[in-house]
Length: 333
Ligand SMILES: NC(=O)c1ccc[n+]([C@@H]2O[C@H](COP(=O)([O-])OP(=O)(O)OC[C@H]3O[C@@H](n4cnc5c(N)ncnc54)[C@H](O)[C@@H]3O)[C@@H](O)[C@H]2O)c1
Image (cartoon, rainbow, N blue to C red; front, side, top):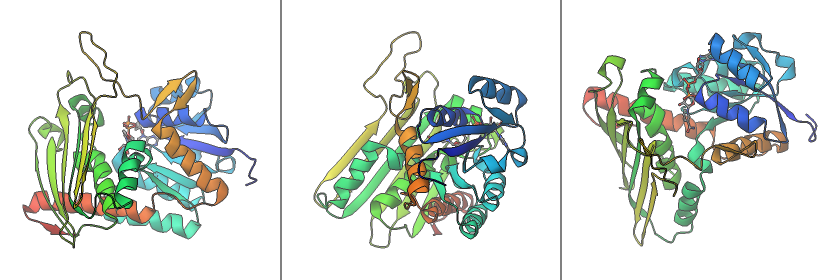
């Protein structure tokens, strides 16, 4: 590929994220949206009309000769098949988090991308969120000293859990973000996880409502992650997140529940203004930064900020946490 060529992109899965990715791609000067793929007829028709792009129901039918890279935005448990197909077709891959919902599937995706020599990036979006990046920089500068303990929370609305329909768990869908962040901040994998979870509202969907994870590192650092997707829908914030790092010489607190924008009406809202928004017909925000990084690495042969092994580690920890919940005991990682 010539450095001046636009990178030809296809998107698999035109749900919430696929739609946002399409808005990002059509806003970037270095990229061109060549096709979209969606198994749901109605969704495919509406997205291909909106983005004036060719649409396919089956990812095996897309024009491979007109594709440099794909974005896989299918549900958590449907990443494997398209990822293997496009890796074998030698297309660079940006796959949404989690890499997979089992360690075995994650390893298969990594092996396929490595043997084809393509880039594989997992959309751990917080790595591009300036608030989390500043936390990382301040820890790396040594100003708070060695980490003693870490706490992270990610709570989401019940309607989101129902939309996702039990196809995954709050650990793979939500906590995976914070699992990755704690490992990244600590710069090492934990050695053990203990987790408990409960299922009351979502029992019929065969998934957990809420889970707590306790993590332990070799040097004695401890971590705690709280995750839930049963916050009431009348809660004004769609996402209630926190991060607290306590070190030997200081602490860092990060809180995301409102973005300094509050809309008061029958159902009050604190809308997101950071991750993805469209201003003057162009997409802006953290999702755009994530995609720009992916394209920059493809074009200029740079190393990805998130390695496939780090994404696999997050899957290993989430899988170990599931095992801990089932076996009611700590699990070594
Ligand atoms: N980074 C973030 O902040 C963030 C936020 C939400 C979701 N996600 C992740 O993005 C992914 C998608 O989530 P979503 O919320 O957009 O889900 P969604 O259900 O809204 O969309 C997924 C779409 O994929 C389609 N699909 C399923 N199998 C397909 C196939 N084989 N070929 C083509 N299309 C197929 C579905 O019909 C659906 O329209 C998940 O992995 C999720 O964890 C990330």
